[in-house]
Image (cartoon, rainbow, N blue to C red; front, side, top):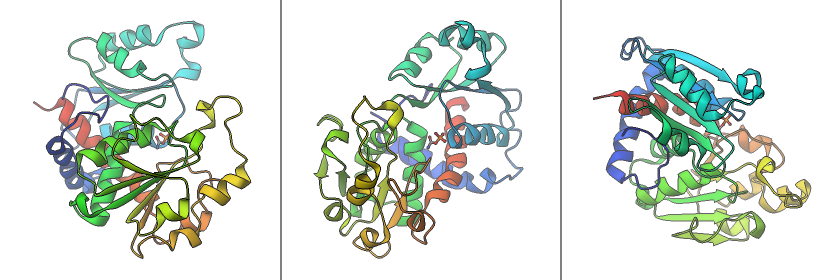
Length: 305
Ligand code: CP
């Protein structure tokens, strides 16, 4: 791998190798010392043109755990405010010796375009572009599923629910679930928040959330991404929670050992009830922790020989 821009097209053996390495790195992700100098002298820059808590912080921690220098970049106080383009920004930071860029951008395809224009030795990791892809979130979601349910995805029924249309997380999860041979992928949401058939390939689509959750092994909830919605698409929040919110009654329809996932940030009372988000079946904070290990594994894969 030179860049990680999408999970689309990544075969199961590569995904599995990344997940197994991430699983092995989980102890180090919590501050172990054995790996601290692995990439000493290399520099990673988090080049975020959109807000983030989890992805930016966990990449910074992951790089630090591998002994790298870490350069933060805050678009709101940068020279992009004076009209500098994203590409000139990247080239400027490349000239300072950045080896790996972790880039988030509001536009679909923007990260791939920057990767294509980067210097030959530069590595680029997509930290989310528009509604297109968020590959490390997809990987950390797969690691969380695998740790809860084992490596055989063919036995699993996984539900992805909510604003699938605007979700880069859903697209990356769908690529990974299909590649790993998930038994049944169910997608549920209001008709105007579902993507086209190209995205939903191989999925069972449900309008009724109770039916979608029935007998599931995992329920992955998505936030309403109002920042990416056209005017008039935002549903009434009260009606949305009634029809598409995950509450305790609905969760009881899934298998007794079903897990609840959410990439964050959560909007409690909109797509997920607070008691479910904090309940015994929730893996939301484990997802966050797994994110550090997954990002260490990805950085290793890009910088390793
Ligand atoms: N899941 C996720 O991408 O969260 P952040 O927007 O906080 O990085």
